[in-house]
Length: 230
Ligand SMILES: O=C(O)CCC(=O)C(=O)O
Image (cartoon, rainbow, N blue to C red; front, side):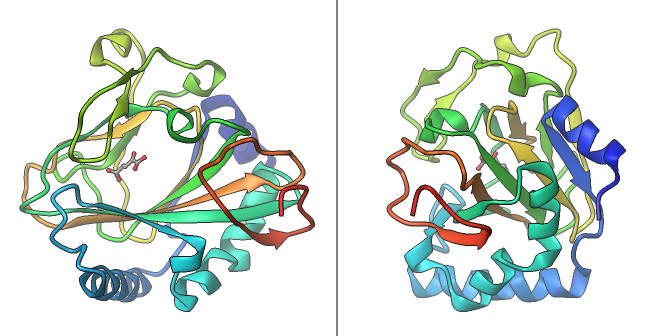
């Protein structure tokens, strides 16, 4: 259960780190399952190191994880009593996918109502192997962004020069740790200069009591309360 201080910090910074949300051994199981799923879909060698699983494609094992009270209880405190799960993204950086994830606000990709995502460390994430970094307070505005031709799937991004002079928090986290973040929080990840695995799993939810005009998702799973969208 979050303290009032943590909830306040989330609203102030646009993100909240929750260490040890999951057990390290459990993260190894998730990672092995994700590798099996990606291999089965022929996605494991995808040079982008990114794959989105929409609801119809999420394995029942992970459906249960996405509605686990462990994560839903926190989201209810941060977002509200009515919640829908939308999709989950595997980001698998390794010796072949070493590049940094560029600065962006997730909202560029989906628009509509605001969403909240949970970035989960499946491996220990450090500055050297590409942990995420966030600009605290950036969720209070939409930053300038460009559409670029990026085979690695990050084709909507904010130029590095927009970040100059802003505070940047590097979120090194041991596996099992999580970052809850607003979809306007400006974020990216460092290069993976170690070449070792740095896997993350990013689950996205929305406030189900707010009508969402986004066209990215055909369906959603209510994980708490009722929805005006489904
Ligand atoms: O490298 C990462 O894990 C961050 C990826 C990311 O920011 C995103 O997919 O929105």
